[in-house]
Structures are given as C-alpha cells and as structure tokens.
Image 1 (spheres, rainbow, N blue to C red):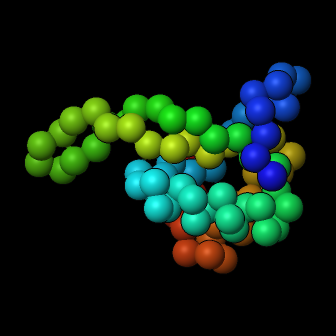
Image 2: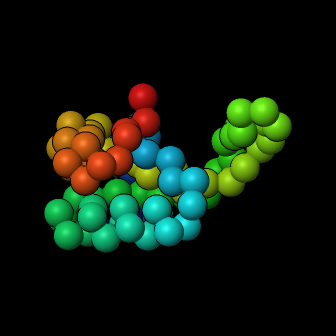
Length: 84
C-alpha cells in the first residue's frame, strides 16, 4: 500500500525502482498493492539518454529496509529490473 513520508521516519528508505514512464509507475503500484507491500513513491530527477543526456523526471519507489528483499523478489517475478 502506498504510504506517506511519515511511514519512513524511523528507518532509511531503500530505493527499489525508478519508473521512467507514468504507465510503468501505475503498473508497479498495482503489483505492490496486490502483494500487500508498503511503499513510498516520489517524483525526482535522474540523468537519462544515451546520446543526448538530459535531466528527466521519474517515479522513485522506496520500501523500508526489512521489506527490500521481498519487494525485489516481487519486482523480478513481474519483469522489473530493481534499482541497485
């Protein structure tokens, strides 16, 4: 379930995925919600492009440290490449 920033106050959130398209972000939210995994998501900038590098905006997905392993396994099962 999508959580507010206060959910992460006592733990350092761990980045699990950067969605570069809105369609991907919405699909991942559905996957995480269906699995009952609590997560945070925020818009942030990343450097993208191979030839013409530029700053772009994506949806950054975070989980609490104790959920990282479960969340990453779920991402892999559903064809997502987790953030390192």
